[in-house]
Length: 102
Image (cartoon, rainbow, N blue to C red; front, side, top):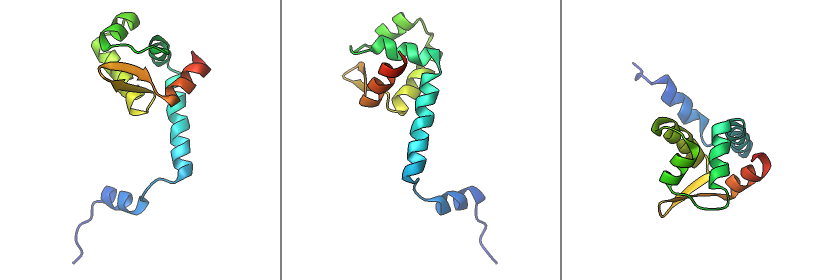
């Protein structure tokens, strides 16, 4: 008798690491998701070339805690912003996006 295999686990075991093409496609998807959202563009614009604290960003953006965390989590996870010493700053990718859409 064969052991029960979870289909999702089997799929991901077979899939392996993403190819470079898949990584590029995902990077473009993330850039699009950040650039078409006015709130994310606003957060990038507020940070700009200067570092900002969470309190400064919340005050200047006017976002409530839920939406602030929602958008900041995306920008941090996708590598557009970086948190260093309690201050948010743009990464190289974030600077590229900032220069093209803000």
